[in-house]
Image (cartoon, rainbow, N blue to C red; front, side, top):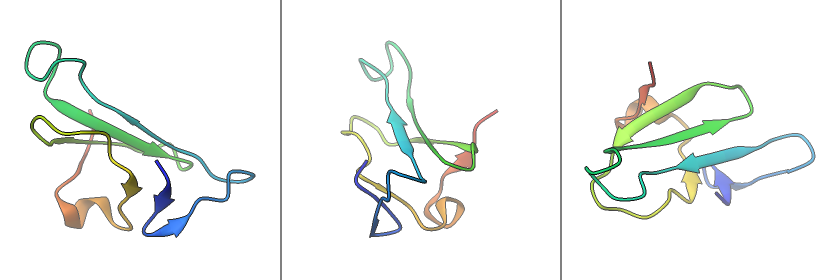
Amino acid sequence: MASIGGQEIDWTKDFVFCAKPTRYWWTGRRVFIVKTDGVVWAKDLGKSDFVVDFPADPSKEGWQVAE
């Protein structure tokens, strides 16, 4: 990921990661994102690429806290 809410990441004090299924539906359906606060968010994005920008407010964009 390259940014958080459109702001460039300061890698000295923040991090963000994105994980997605290797093959949609066969190995999973949800994409997972996590940032420095440790909350893991999940969303089914269909057959998509990695998320590049961590949303400023993931819940407003349909992401749900992963169980």
